[in-house]
Amino acid sequence: MTETPLIQHIPVLLDAVLTGLCPPYAPPARVIDGTLGAGGHTRALLEAGAREVLGFDLDPAALEIARQTLLPYGDRAHLVHASYTQMKEEAARHGWDNVDAILLDVGVSSMQLDRPERGFSFIRDGALDMRFDPSGNNPSAAEVVNLWSESDLADIFFTYGEERNSRRLARAIVKNRPYQTTTQLAAVIEQNAPREKRRDGKRIHPATRIFQALRIVVNDELGMIERVLPSAIELLKPGGRLAIISFHSLEDRIVKQTFKEASEEIISPPGMQLAEKKAIVRQITRKPIEATDAEIVQNPRSRSAKLRIVEKL
Image (cartoon, rainbow, N blue to C red; front, side, top):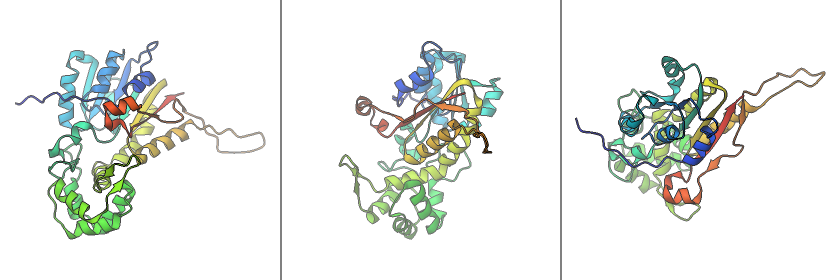
């Protein structure tokens, strides 16, 4: 069996995560890292004083790299091949009825983007897959682009990719079926959509939003976030903290709205009968924490990262 090589990975917003979840005066006993990746955040949390971390990842390759990364920490690191949506059940299986802190770094990881065979990137040729867990039951990106109707493709490109040329691109994609590789699909998109400029003047490849939309649909990313947030808050002990790192507006919008609603309190004034509601968390970050210029230089993928933290009441 070939040993999985260690990959240099820079955890995003690491200092802010440690400050928010692992204060030196009260390091957490039990932490859940719902998006383990290469294990960078978990390693830092253990180094900062966390007693134990329960880590989740759907990607078997990432899990194997994390095992090597976290080998020095022995039984302080518990690794699970599962979705973070199963954290409540898995925590119970480990005898954890509540936890001190939870971290989710949602979206695609650097390791997945850097491996052409995973199909997340159109920079190099690879199979059109995009599944976080290639052994799972989710449809691959190839199945979506080759089998879904033109109208359904247009809808997901607009909704999840925020692509203004969604119908035009869906029409072109359907016309040029079938697709097996990332570069085949990217080439058709490029031939049928104008390039756009980012705010910093750099050019955006027209396939960027389409690949984002396909990845979100293939892995049900937004649905997973919506499902996990209530159970994650419930799993926290009073005073425990939940930190979410998101990378695009659709993810951040869900997190922001959920945290806002969970922190709102409604009390009926005298003489009025309103549907009362107790706040269950307080927002530690009213505005998201973003990467500094220095971090962006060191790790360009941190440019779009946003960190929000709440504390359970």
